[in-house]
Length: 614
Image 1 (cartoon, rainbow, N blue to C red):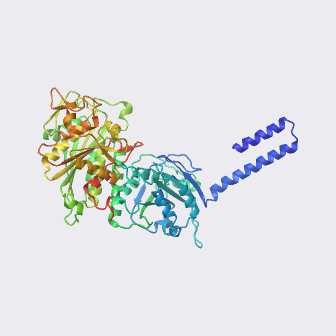
Image 2 (image 1 turned 45 degrees about the horizontal axis):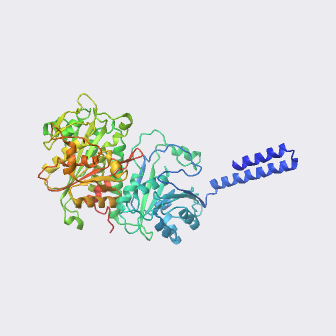
Image 3 (image 1 turned 60 degrees about the horizontal axis):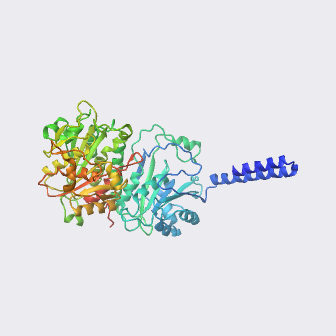
């Protein structure tokens, strides 16, 4: 268009100065030639696809390829993910995504004799080399480069459609508070490089050091399950009209097949590690689906039914519930009072996994075989109660059960992997609703610990339900050696540790370090808070009760204070460990659940094959 406008100006100038017709005709001829050449180039870029390569750089944003239509994409509602090694996938795939650290990818791309075994065809080495060279190995969010290439066919076989080949390069080195493979970037890059339909072969170069489980979780996070959109369209505009019609068929399903490669580019076939990757992905997608589901659909009743359906055929898991008025009768004043104003009753759901006798105990569990108790905040919707949130502040509060979904997804994955450790799970399910029965500011309630709490903020409800649960665990479960509670508890967490790192509070320095290590290994990053209960508990002082439920001074380590409130309800005779995880920030991203907590749980319970390599 720039050339076309420039030629017009030449022609106008020539006419106004009485330029001879011959020169005017020459200008018009030149303009026509430039237009013809330009159109030929554009046509070639569309139809002569061999060698076509376009770098799609982005810093955490998806960039549509050239000539794509900007349309709404149905978020992978029917995307199936497979991890079992399958050589046939190379012939079935319509697109390939290669993911790895920038330097490691360079070594793989230089092995030109391995292209056929990797891709199922032989792309031109210069195409891959130029795609890789276009990427920056030091970019914090990584980068991707895509090319459409022709796949040769043999004999009378029907021609295959152009194959989308993408290279996703991760940062070569990271700082000490990030996973070495930048798993947040893996999620974003894989999601952006994967077409909305067809069969995609995702190959992840995990080298010889990194566990498959965390990478499987990161890939699973790319393809959330929940969706209530009524239409979908193809995201890429290369398809013809017939293909577009096929893309709008709601019966279409897409398949993503994940293959893991070692440093030499060889396929990893260790069944235990692959099973861990698949279980982690399933756990993350379950957690994301629950967080994304709106509260009219995911009530406390529906959440409990979800738990029962997950384990109805598994003899290793038992389920108990305390529901509604029974909570009041038995003294669970936190859960009952938070949820008593809702149409669906509050409930404490308790699941116990007893490993089969024939499971093999790993070396790292020989020293510590104690039971781990997982406690999750499951506020299916948080209006703030009578201390009502603003219109803007209330939107997104369906995510306030992110802690419960994270520990449930981790528990499910650990059960699938037959983890050789007894695990207990406690889900505190309630809706913090507004109604004639809602708990009021100034009410005094008694938690299961026996301690009284003056309500000075009904919007600080998460700590009340968690206080009941940790009191129950530490009073009745003598086999428990570690209690881990997880919650989207405070907005102050984002100020303390950011959007990607959960904040942790632990009652021993050893547990604090253990949690940080598990976060780095799993990709569910976390970072310690100030632990000083003797200095901070005064923030909850009350004239008429044992404590208030919200701090007096919000600028005094508010995130730590919230954790210490929960800790204060641990039974005084309990001698084990306690870790509090506030994941308000990393629990969601771009209005979607992230499945945070699944990987952290799997690492802490020692799930077989999750974050270690054999």
